[in-house]
Image 1 (cartoon, helix red, strand yellow):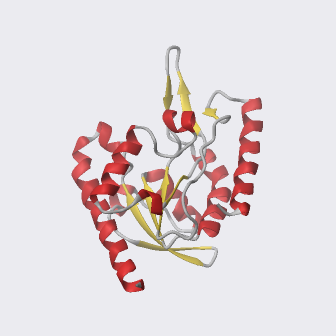
Image 2: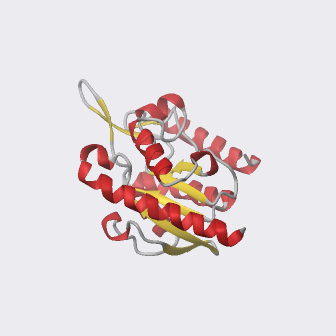
Image 3: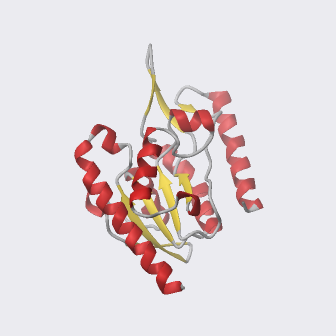
Amino acid sequence: MEKELLALYAAERARLHAMACGNGRSGEYEAPVFGEGPMGPRLMLIGEAPGAEEAQFGHPFVGRAGKTLDALLDGAGIVRENIFVTNAVKFRPINIKARSISNRTPTPKELRESLPLLERELLLVRPQMIATLGNTPLRAMFLLAGADPVSIGDAHGHLWPLTIRSMPLAVFPLYHPASVLYRPSLLPVLEMDVKHLGSILNKTEEAGS
């Protein structure tokens, strides 16, 4: 992985460590999860934020949602090892109750604070296409492009051309794999969208060969 990207991750780890020292109750700042995969890939996947299993093991999409994602990618002929996988927010946002700790959606402030790193990540990894998983990374991409965000319900399954720092990007919004765990009716939609993404990737590969 490129040294500059590793340096960015090290700086973010230090920033989050400082946040943990001041207030470690709204996020697992001490266990950030950074992007993994090849540089210059045909596809970059951007999720929302790590969950419990991701924070525990230090890798993106290794929990229940990750297993769903792997099955979807396999069904569409997309090899995970060939794509770069990351999250818009690199730490696990949490809600703490008397007897439990649960995931939560990153706040708008947390997302804004994470945008500079995500932007640098995009510019260094330089993917040919981006697939966002859920509303949070979709919003992040539109904010970085200086465009008005759209909802995942309106945007999913279609390519959206965006430009970030003079770099043209094709963004393909998808529902988050975790959404089908509590809304099973979304699974056929997500399967169809991921297969559509796979067909687009195959066409671009054939055109470039």
